[in-house]
Image (tube, rainbow, N blue to C red; front, side, top):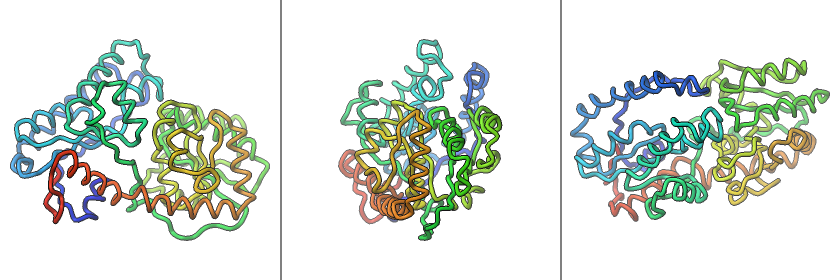
Length: 368
């Protein structure tokens, strides 16, 4: 998204990149010694690319490490020192927090978790600039990993307007589709969505569509099967690219429902994606979300860990078509004003100007 934003602004960027197949990270076995070593060895494939593109790297103004770049940072740090280039890192998430708190596949006291914490503390302090997506996330990086506050800069996490864009059409009937799209992370609280579908099962005007696969898929699929729910359709093997027609067919876009400190201090990309599509998004309220969104104006907040609250929100928006339309239109406007790739790119360039003291006008900045 940031690269798209830079391109929209006429800024040149080059990629030094090896396209690797995604390896799952869903349970303790995926974090055992051999899978972890395999991940590290795979990352060594970046060395030949660095050597091949070293001239390109030397000619750039800024080295930017994008997500998922946790294993790229040590090499990027060495290259930045050799070329005397400023280094910017956008981790998006902390793996330590994700694995111990959100996915709960590591105990915070385990040896691996402690090593992961020390590794993240090291790499978060390596760059000249560390990107956070909210002020609360910035404060968290400072408090948890001792990163100096003046090194952490905020770039709001947006949604890719090449994929997530508003068609302009809003359904005005009470026959609606409620869509969840995601990787079934525990923090998404998909079980509350299934419970909400159970509560709404006698309302034949509400259809639930679940797109994606992941850690809690089997549990939630079996839960829906246990309840004999006819109002949910699962699209397990549908990807983001293949599932856009399903996502765009939504009248209500589902966010996150499991209480979590991560959700409280960040703006979930799922929420921004729903806003970009011009959908009425329902999600749990969070401190950061409330600083950007207004309940029943451009979003609909429900309680965390509460299927009845979610079901009540769905039923309200199903029946109140005027409110649903207003939330959809206002969400789209909020996205266009604050969360497009161009806004993200503009913010990054301002950081380059103010923090790194680089001239970024007239296409003068190259980021690799």
